[in-house]
Amino acid sequence: MLLKTENVSVTFGGVRAVDSVNFSVPNGEVRALIGPNGAGKTTFFNVLSGRFSPSAGSIVFDGVDITGMPPRKIVRLGLVRTFQISSIFPGLTVFENVWAACNTSHSLFETVLSPAARRSVSMKVEEILETLQIQSLARRPASELSYGDQRVAEIAIALGLRPKLLLLDEPTAGMSPTETGRVVDLINRLRSDLTIVIVEHDMELIMNLADKISVFERGRLLVEGSPVEIKENEEVRRIYLGTVTC
Image 1 (cartoon, rainbow, N blue to C red):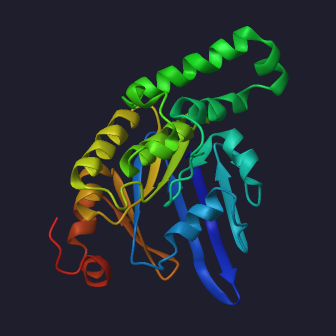
Image 2: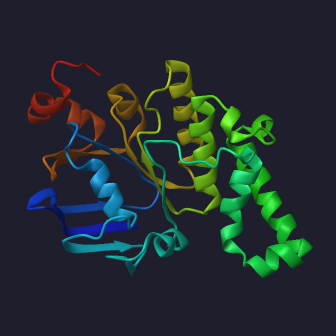
Image 3: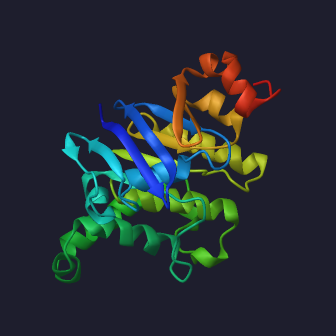
């Protein structure tokens, strides 16, 4: 397993936002986390990425115990996340934003004094922009981008950190159907090279994209299964899907 948690809990003021979660993701899978608002999904992402330390339990990523490890060290191991709200540098161009992320694998000395290191970073940026088909945005300031383009640029920044596992927190929130379709195409292009865990409320998207779905309720991992199994699970339909047909 690339990622595994055992009995992970997070407590805030006596309230368990995440409650004894056992969760595992193998290499190469696209896993979706769903559940009602307040179910603990984003808090769980925050624990996996090191923003919060678990109150109990352990987290192992790629064979390394990362429990309580600071985010910068977790990122260097290859576990990278995006956020619900775009977190790019608005005063930099798209190229510069992605360049800054790619540059983390080099020392300041290398990138200042070594032409070879600078070329290597620039080539990596160009490769990422080409993969995401946003070369035309490279020289545009991030502040001038549409909301949809900003979210794609944020994924480009995440790729610059060389992830093995990419955590996507509501990547299509606030997007139009056209923009959402673009993100779906993007994820499908990335899935052959990356393991992806995605929190998303768009059930049609999840049912068509995920290999497996994990359902959270009140901080607990309620049930897991294939999209078909989750769609047909009466308890899931009762607490989350309601009468939605997918």
